[in-house]
Length: 178
Ligand SMILES: CC(C)(COP(=O)(O)OP(=O)(O)OC[C@H]1O[C@@H](n2cnc3c(N)ncnc32)[C@H](O)[C@@H]1OP(=O)(O)O)[C@@H](O)C(=O)NCCC(=O)NCCS
Image: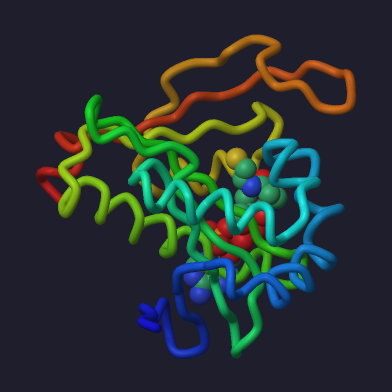
């Protein structure tokens, strides 16, 4: 299976149904950490269900999931939560387990997705949605050159409480000069 080096000790590679045992072990380490900040299905569904769902999205060209391996251990990943070729709009998401946070792994992995979406797939707009109080996630969006376009008040529901949601995006035209 192909993989893309992010740097000497880390690589990016598609996360597929056959990775379920390794993904399940990773989710054990990650879930409590990511639960408030990611979609409820990703936070709670069994590993094999998530991987099968994304495999179906790959088949439909409507989403993709890639893992980040650090020193041979699956520590997180990045995904196209949504990918709509017709409208030219997609959305990128990400997560890492606690031990891999603050190591500079996620931003370059997301950059691979943004570049591929725009330059290979001709996407016009790459979005990013996060809880407004998720400073680490917003920092990744900003590092990717995204613009904070607005706040969807009360759009994020977590354990019965509502939170504001930020909408960030970068356009193909924003990347033309870079
Ligand atoms: C959002 C999330 C993925 C961001 O992870 P992250 O590790 O902060 O992001 P990056 O990989 O871009 O790393 C940047 C950090 O690594 C540090 N870093 C360390 N080594 C580095 C290196 N070689 N190169 C670049 N940065 C490095 C940076 O200084 C920065 O840390 P700081 O913000 O404390 O200054 C992570 O916090 C997470 O999984 N949160 C829970 C789930 C979540 O919120 N997902 C997003 C839903 S919208």
